[in-house]
Amino acid sequence: MTTYRMYGWAVDADFPLHLPTDSDKPNLRLRLEELASQSAELPPGKILLDYQARGRRWYSVGRLPDGELTMRVYGLCDIFVNAERNSIRIALLPDADLGMAQVMATGTIPALLLYLDDIPVMHSSAVTCADGRTIAFLGRSGQGKSTLAALMCQQGAELLTDDVLPVVCQRPVTVAVGSPEVRLREAARALAVGSFRTSADARLVVPLRSEHVTMSERRLDAIFIPLPNRESVLEVFRLSKPEAHVSLMRYPRLLGWQDPKVIRTMFGLASAVADTIPVFGAKVPWGPPFRNDIASTIADAAARPDEVRIFGS
Image 1 (cartoon, rainbow, N blue to C red):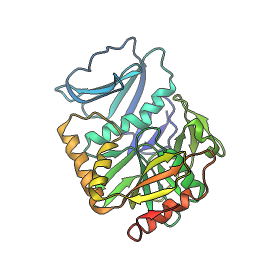
Image 2 (spheres, one colour):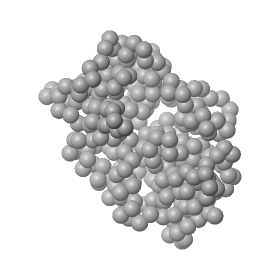
Image 3 (cartoon, one colour):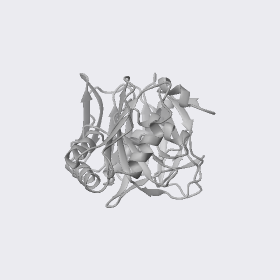
Image 4 (cartoon, rainbow, N blue to C red):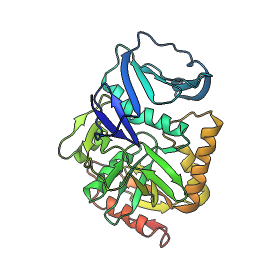
């Protein structure tokens, strides 16, 4: 059985994961099983998280008095976490694609565990630019985070992570290296150069980093919030501290938190980031084709955050 490396865990999984391998002794066990049927009710115990949108419930987390957790992803699976949070069972409904276990194991599950360990998680993709600055793209699903990360990598940046960005220290803001792949939507197929595969949720998964990285953590230098447009507008502008704080609270990796401890951690992160690093809005002309000056405009803003407010044209 293969052991994988993921955000500081050595993961022993009984199904394949597209992650770097690890020779350390496993400290997180993942097992896949079948869920005969699923309740439409909230999971048992105290509700820590309950995300509802567009007239339906998407996922919830309940904690029993003994510390065991159940995460219910409605219509897909129940995820059972033991009290020590080192053994997890992913129970998929019979008609669910087995590949969704990989999606849960590399995105939703580590985000949940990190939050409960007081490590806030931004819904971000991140790269280290050719000049050594580390930047993140923050936003909701479909907002262009992975696309911009892939564009930056085409111009010499190194991918740090896609979709899940743990903040392991808030002052200075320091982030953990994660997935070596980006997950692109079909509209960004032009960026899927070289080999790629299609995930269970119909994303084009492109490897953009070798397994060997020199550092497991990087200091974050800037955050960009993508604002795609079809009007050929390329404009990068710095947000005020209050604007940055609100934006950071808007895009956690998991939505619907009710646990006061997690909410306090999220507020602490928003304050630390707004106080110490620049946060930009990035109006980006969307492709394909993608303009060849997008990556350079973003890198220029990260390098000169205090010099001018607006970059690009």
